[in-house]
Length: 347
Ligand SMILES: Cc1cc2nc3c(=O)[nH]c(=O)nc-3n(C[C@H](O)[C@H](O)[C@H](O)COP(=O)(O)OP(=O)(O)OC[C@H]3O[C@@H](n4cnc5c(N)ncnc54)[C@H](O)[C@@H]3O)c2cc1C
Image (cartoon, rainbow, N blue to C red; front, side, top):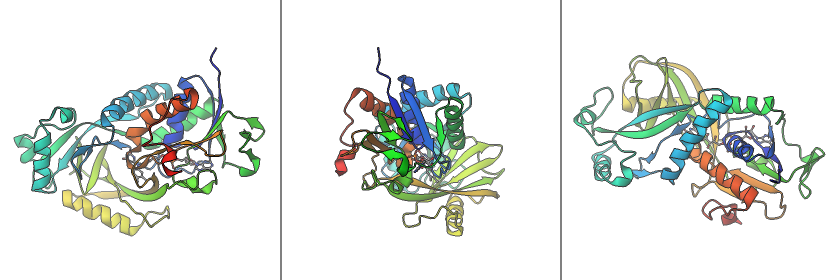
């Protein structure tokens, strides 16, 4: 008979929720602890863009991550009884002739055929936005309703008696024994996102805080059948509402939306088009990022029951379904995780 583990997950953002769902699939006893201060998962645009336009390359491990993300989120929708996953086409408005050439070079290669549409006359002459160098359409992108993802996971954990709504209490924790508030756990996994440094166990790891801001606007002039992209993304949410994002701010750790952030997003939007629009709201959050752009998974060097799953960064929604499965397999069956994402690369 399978040995069922008692597992405590600290943090119910993207990392903690995906991991909890993966471990539940394997039949283990899960407790999720979250203090309800989420400023990344629920603020994110939740986009899964297959391409990195700067280098006109596929995003890291795309061919594995994308199909698994789609399958995972669609099956999660059924479990949580909600709608989360939305396929979308991204229209890249090229920023230079060179960028266009780079697309043209790649669009016929077999490894890009699932992602880059062949440029047509319509793409070259697209006139619903500024288009001086032409445009191209990315296939198989998606966006996930991030606020719903966070809230509906929390509700699920609560309904199933698995949620502790509180801040992790160091005074009630024995890290050697894995005992929290008198209960013995086989594994405790810290999924605290950018707040990682607030607890001592993995504070040495180089998880940085990268603030991001977005705007919600309404407009009847912006195309709502695809997501426009140049300098910023314009994500149609339905009913003439769009999300514009996002900023990248490295030396600003306040969670407050700023006028500078708003001005930057509006000036980026102006590069795409001079659309009549009304600003509805502004949001700010903080991404947990790592300099080498790879997440951090692994175990504590001293306390054998403690683990970390963090650093999901700017492409978290694409990566989390596969990485949470790999992490669950590592935790339960000891299947090695690759060096590229292991916390050991910093130890
Ligand atoms: C503006 C913005 C736009 C983004 N857009 C995208 C996008 O389009 N696509 C994409 O893939 N990614 C995007 N991201 C990145 C994405 O949001 C992150 O990769 C992801 O949400 C990180 O998830 P996480 O679970 O690691 O952290 P978090 O979401 O921060 O979750 C951590 C959780 O831990 C809890 N917690 C922390 N410390 C404690 C403690 N001591 N005790 C109890 N609970 C604790 C918090 O309450 C929180 O709920 C965006 C981020 C921002 C800010």
